[in-house]
Amino acid sequence: MASTVPDATKTFNGKLSGRLAILGLAIGLITKALTDRGILDQVFGIFASGTTTPLY
Image (cartoon, rainbow, N blue to C red):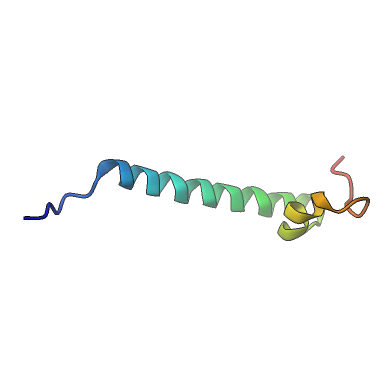
């Protein structure tokens, strides 16, 4: 018979992963509001030379 009790480690890891993803999205949206740079520009703009605005 297969056990119907979920694995506690998988449950914890799933919740932690989801919470960190939401936290990252919230930080990205707050940074966008403060700097007027979109999330993609924040992530991929660091690789472009001289095209990003400084954060100070």
